[in-house]
Structures are given as C-alpha cells and as structure tokens.
Image (cartoon, rainbow, N blue to C red; front, side):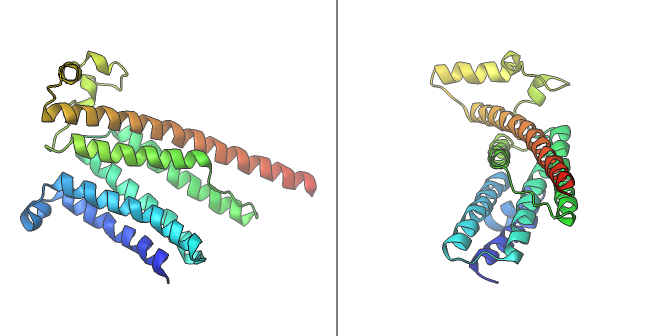
Length: 228
C-alpha cells in the first residue's frame, strides 16, 4: 500500500457517502448543507483523486498491481452509483444509464477473456472522452436537480428528442439569457441541457469504444491464429 492506492481506496469510500447524501436528508441534518450541493463537492473531490492517484503513482514510481486493479473498479463504482441515483431522481433516462453501465460489464468480461488468451487490451483514448462526458453529465444534472425535481422533464417529450428548443422552459431560459435576467431556474435548465447533452456524448462514445475493443480483440486473435 502507498499514497496513490490510499487515494483510490478513499474514492471507493466516497461511493456510499455520495449515495447517502443524495437519497437521505443526512447532509441537511448534520451539516446544514443542501444534499445536491454536498454531493457535487463529494463527486468533484472523488474525481480529483482519480487524476491525482495516477499522477502520484507515475511520478513516485509507485505503480502497483493492486493499484492497477483498484483504480478502474473505483472509477466504475463512483460513476455507476452516481448515474443510478440520477435515474432514481428522474434526472437521467434509465436506458442511457443501462447502456453505459452495461458497456462496463461487457468490456470487463472481454478483457478477462482476452487475458486468458494472452491478449492485453489497453485503454483507448476515446475512453477518456467518455469518462469526462460522464463526469460533466453527472455534475450538470446534479446542478439541475438542486430542487429535487428536473426543471425540464425529458425535454417535455415522452421519448428522447433533440427538439429541446421547442420546450417552454428552454425558450424562457434563453430569452432571459439574452436579456441578462437569468433566474435560478434558468441556470438549472441550462444545467439540464448540458447534462443531457453530455450524457448523449457518453452513450455514443461508450458504444464506439466498445466496438473498438471488440475489433482489436478479434484482429489480435486472427494474428495469433495466422502465426500458429
């Protein structure tokens, strides 16, 4: 155990804390802080430890097997817990969260299967974009849900739609933006727009990167078969 690994463990500890402050009034009762505000702080600190532990491990030459194992687990737990709570709060669509979390299980299984055949599947650059998109979506949707309810329910449509500009709350928010008279609810509407947009980016990059992983796996298998 070393400092980078302790930071990774701290990120895992933050997972149940994030869930508790979002689903219970403990933050208001104990600290006098609104639950969503406290959750945003917890999530940002946890995300910062993700950047810091990798940097420290490399700069101190403390890269370890236990760290390589725990780091992706901590990331997946943190993001999955936050997204599931957002579904519970009606701030994120269940279908999008199912795709993102399901993709993580599939890729984990693929990597395990590849490892048994001596194929190492490294992380792709697009995976970083997916992670950043997820973080932006989570923070923005937490801002949007500060009152406990989404300021715009699925953009006012029963099915996902890109025609968000036709929704009254969105039109009002942009009108207030141009007139420099933004209200608190307008900021929540913009947070919701950013969050849902980032969630779309996360879904697309999740599917795209999954395709890339499978393509790499089958190409490597063909190479090994040809070599044999």
